[in-house]
Image 1 (cartoon, helix red, strand yellow):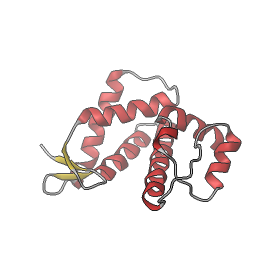
Image 2 (tube, helix red, strand yellow; image 1 turned 90 degrees about the vertical axis):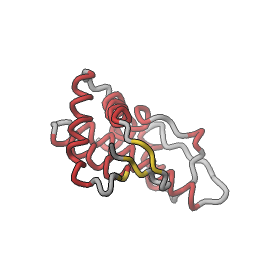
Image 3 (cartoon, one colour; image 1 turned 30 degrees about the vertical axis):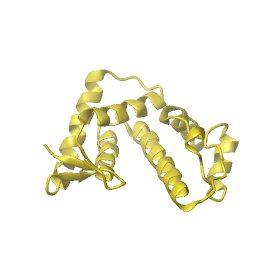
Image 4 (cartoon, helix red, strand yellow; image 1 turned 180 degrees about the horizontal axis):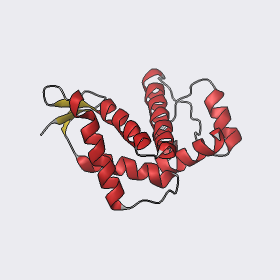
Length: 147
C-alpha cells in the first residue's frame, strides 16, 4: 500500500475513508442527495484517477484533491466539484494567512452574500481556527453568493 504526503511533509498511511468523507461533505454542503454506494464509487474512481501520480509509494494530498475535483466533474457533479474547489481555496487562504501573519486579526468568512463578497475583496486577514466553520456551512454561502 502507498502513503500520503501531507502539506506539512508528514507521511501517513493511505485511508480511503478520508476521500469518501471529503466527498460526502461536499454533497452535504449543497444538500445534494446521494447514497453510500455513490460515495464509495466516486472514492474508488478518485484512486484510479491519481494512480499514475504515485511515485516511490507516495502521493501528495494535493494530487488526491485534484483527482477528487476531476472525478466529480467527470461524473456529472460539477456543482459538488465547485463547492469542493471553493472549500479548498478557503482552506488554502486560511493556511497562508496563518503562516504569514504574526498577530492574527480575525475576519468571518461566513454570513450573508454581502459579507462574503466583502471578505473576498478585503486585504488578507488572519482567521483564527475558532472562527472557521465546517465545509457545508462555508460552501453553501460561497455558492449562493457566486450565483
